[in-house]
Every structure is written in C-alpha cells, then in structure tokens.
Length: 463
Ligand code: ARG
Image 1 (cartoon, rainbow, N blue to C red):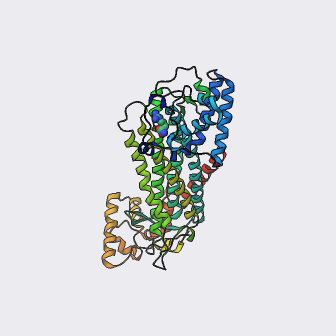
Image 2: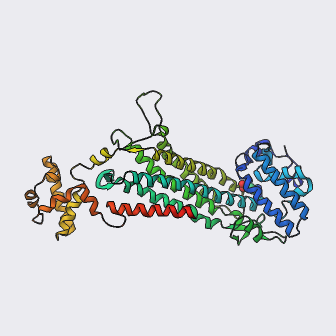
Image 3: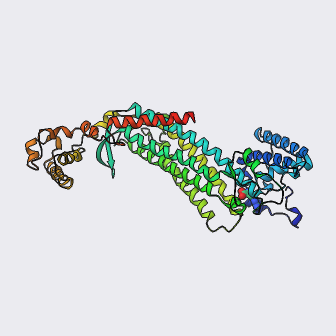
C-alpha cells in the first residue's frame, strides 16, 4: 500500500475494502493526457511567478513528459491504493525527480485539477464525436443522391400517408444529426472557463496567474466563483444530454432500418458486413448492428439520468459523489462513437429496392389528400373537401376499388367541382411535384435541400 498524501493527519491505514471502493484510477487513467498537460501549465506558471524555483518547474515539466512516455509505452505502474490518476501521476513524479515533484501541488487541489482535466477531456471528445457525425452526414447525403427520384410511401402512425421521396426521408435524418453536431459545439460555452486556481473551494493564498494557465490550456476565460468551479458539472450534463439525444436519433433510424429490412417491407438489403446470422436457423440474416444501436440508447439515457441524480441535492462545494461523473461519461463517449461508426458503415453498405419502395405507394389511396386539395383549388372549403374525399374513399373501399378507377362522371356524383383534370392529380408524380414549398418533398425542393446540405459540409471542411 502506497503512502497517502494525508498520512500526517491519520493514525491508521485505509482498509482494503475502502481502497477498492474508493479507487477511480482503473477508469480515470483515461484522463492522463489532460492531467499531465494541466500540471505542466500549472508548474510553468508557478515557476514564472516565483512561487516555486524555476529550476524545479523545469524538472517537473521534464518529469511529467517522461511519465507521459511511460504511460504511453505501458511501462507505468498504476497503483489503486493511490486512488486516482492525479495522485498516481504526482506520486510517480516525486519518486522519479525527488523534492521538486512535491512542489507541484502548491496552490492546487485535486478538486480544481479534476474539474480542469474533465473539461479538457470532454472538449476533445466532443470534437472527435463531431467528426464522426460529419462522416455519417456524408453517408446520408451520398445515399440520398444515389436514390434521388426514388419515391415511397411516407407514413404517419405507421400507416401509409402521402408519397414522398426516399431522399427526403433520408435527409430528415441529416437535419437531426446536423442539430446534434451543433449541440456538441454549443455546450463548449459551458466549459469555456478554466477552474484552475479555485483550489479546494476557496481560491488560493498564492499570487498565481490564472489567466496564464487558462490561455495555455485553451480556455477563453477563468471561472468567476471558486466554489461553483469545483462543484459544477453542468458541462458534463449538457454533454450527456447532447450525446443521449444523438443516440436517440440514431435509434430512430436504426428502428426504420430494422423494419425496412424485414421480409414484410423488403425496402432495404443490409450489407453482410453489418449483419449476423443465426446459430440455429440457417436462413436468417439479422440486423443486429441496428438493434444494438437501438438497444444502447437505454444506457445513454441512463448515463444522463445517473449524473443528474448524482448532482441533485449536493451541498456546496466539492463532494466525492462527483467522482461518479466519470464512468457514465466514458461509457457515453464510447457508446456514441461506436454507434456513429457502425451506423455510417451500415447505411453506406445498404441498398434500397427501388421497385419495392415505389410499388408500395400503389395502394389506391395514397393521393387522397391531393384529391381534397384539388377541390379546395376549385373553391371548396378544405373541411368540406376533406369530407367529400372521405366519402369517395369509403365508397371505393365498399366496392373494392381504388381512386384511380373512378371515372370523372362517378366523381361528379360526389361533387360537381370535379372535371377532366381531376384524374391527373391522382398520380404519385403529380402529388410529389405539388409539394413545392421550402422543406417539402417536391423533387426540386429536395434537390435544393441537398445542395444546401452539401454546402454545409463543405463549410465544415474549411472551418
Ligand atoms: N477522483 C476524484 C474525482 O473524480 C478527484 C478529486 C478528489 N478530491 C477529493 N477531495 N477527494 O472527483
């Protein structure tokens, strides 16, 4: 068991049970890079301000760089009795460079240290996840382009509603993921302030330069209240929310893929590389990739809930409960990254069955709304037009016919406003063309939306 930094105050050792319970190094060693970067900036500042000898600062920086190499080539010995990543690194430093190492923690607490590390960590991870989102956005727009012109039923209540373009359907997901991309940048405002210098809770008695470390570590400002800075985890909650919502969007897409890949729909064939077989039924090809994405959404929501409940009722300032922010966050980072990569691969390798999609619109009634709209254009109030068209549908259903089998004369028995041109508007193409509003599914409008989306991606490339 290693010597604890608080040994001066204590008469007895920590129990083994407590040590196992309390350690976080098994998972928070993921923060080693940020921890070292933060400590280097802190040591440099302490040296500049004359709070520790400049030579000690130099030794500390060199020592920390060596430790980083040791961690990266796997020769570093992580010791659970030193609790966390912070104490492991600091204690190794002191072992390796002697007295200078014991000066590193001057005017700092693990409370502002962990707040700093975690902000830097999430800043990096959010950036990486945004890159994965961009990859998925690219795949979506490519698929939409590949199938431009292919039409299908659009659904409400999972009942055929109105014809739409497959590309319009796919681009709906583009919009969701574009917003997720924005949200993962938006939460950066919440972590723009460096907590370093807040000490344990009250600030520090040393003449430190908070701006200097903040600048060096890429923060645009320093936190305004030391107690808030060491105990707030707003930035974690915001990240977990953005991540959970993104996963929910993935899950909706996954659900549609699962449904569409069923024999009943047969709208899409999934690539073997993202499917699995059955150990018993030789004919099976299962959409496990999409099911796992859908399934993992539960834990993403759980991770957010877990943090929110941890924060609820915490008194000021730092409490050890806050250590419970790490595992859910690491899990959400990994789960979302994996899901985004899998979805991009799955979608890229999927091929849609144009014929199946298009024949699914031939159910006889999918353009009923267009028939009602026709009457409205002739001057009939919409509510009446809706009722008249409803009666026509009812009549067809009773007689086992479909709308396009009606003659104009027959239509006229329901309303004198029907003319020869009424039958033309019943085709899917006419229905699509008429949805000529911004955001509508008219082919030209969908092309515009795709152009705009491509420009958005090109803009991201240059950012
Ligand atoms: N491992 C701790 C955490 O994640 C670091 C801070 C410990 N601070 C303390 N006062 N015990 O929150």
